[in-house]
Length: 227
Image 1: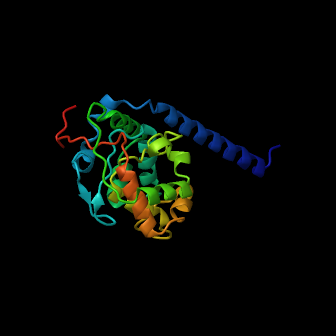
Image 2: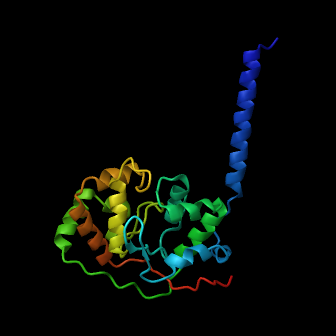
Image 3: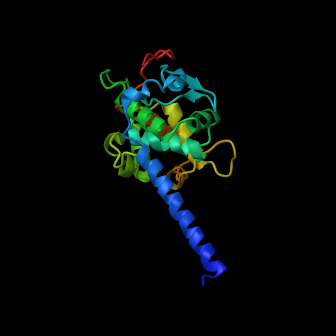
């Protein structure tokens, strides 16, 4: 005769198996990202990422990042991080939490292809090249972000080359921020790396990133997007 504890254990195991099966089924429902399907989903992105030089005021004034030409897997990773609160940003959190996993896959696929037919973005100037290269070596940045900081060793890592330097500076500072409910990014690898540098050094690094030629673009698009 089964004891109550055995019955409870079997019910618990059955529940876990059922939950695992349900989550697996949901994961299997996400198809590879479709850029064409994203055309009806990116309206909320265009108001910032579709305007060249558009500035955000949170947590301080900076240009919003260029995302056209970025790796699809990185865009997916970033949006999921905003969903979970690992990246703290009220606007991006609100947008990300409104998206399904399929929406995220489609939007990421769209932006990874966007702007490929456009000329390269003009690099931003820097006067600290030698010092910056020493800092890149100190942080071993090429080990993850690859040659020219534009060929990541894993597609979930971002391309950095040519990104707006003021955005890069704000992003790097956010990895140094701990125990703040409003701002900061939770990533153990980047947190450890960013804390190797002073704020003036982070600014030099950010200027250097902006001075490199890369694949990133801001593609001007109308907020009234035709599918």
